[in-house]
Image 1: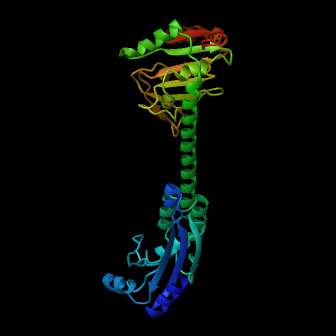
Image 2: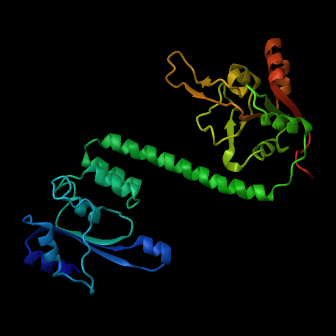
Image 3: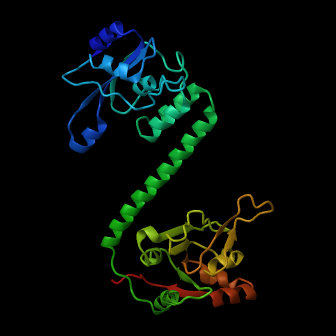
Length: 331
């Protein structure tokens, strides 16, 4: 193939070239068959009509195959004329076996950051490779590198949630059934009627009795949200998505946190504003109407006794309290 590239280069006035051999990763993944692609990028010394270029390419066959012109940024304008070279020669490209060229990217021509974005989004290169080329391209390097870092974190978070969902669904198939608790059943039934507000459920008891799993099994794994409140004065509700989550569990929540966020825990018709401050730069709002909210604690009863009378009265009127003293599953 390299010999044919050089022969064609001499016959047709090629100023610069690049050639690459790659494994077709899609064919390998779908059929386990190794299929090789041979690529050539040619920069002609003189412009010519597209039809004329195709006639020249018809002279070239390799292993009885005719060339298939690429549509990857082949426009004849300055901003794109080296895109094909970058596509073939970018380092650590997925599936690339070997490459040869008489040009060096970033030195013989500038690399358009959009070419890097396209290869990264199509998973032809890694985030590390993309960052390296953004830095070498210089233009808007910090912004582009920060964007890749943000995308990496988001993709990793989404992958983690997907893996968690698979494990959660698998565990649910092996769990024992839970005991029926009258107060819990009545609380769940209350959400069947349309009201302006609803009570939250408190499961108070020692660790290891199944409080969290009982709450999680009130809905499907993808509709359940656990919020860690061990040291929080305001619960972090940034992961809450209305319409997706219908059960929210506040693990290790404290009485004073509930009092400071009354509107949130009433599951009412009003929108609750969280993370308020003097400037409200980080403030955001959530609408919890008819969302089942559950508090798990092992010190709730003791904390409530130490609360002011007004706060204790509000808690009692707006919650359903269940003292858990034994395992919640059927033995």
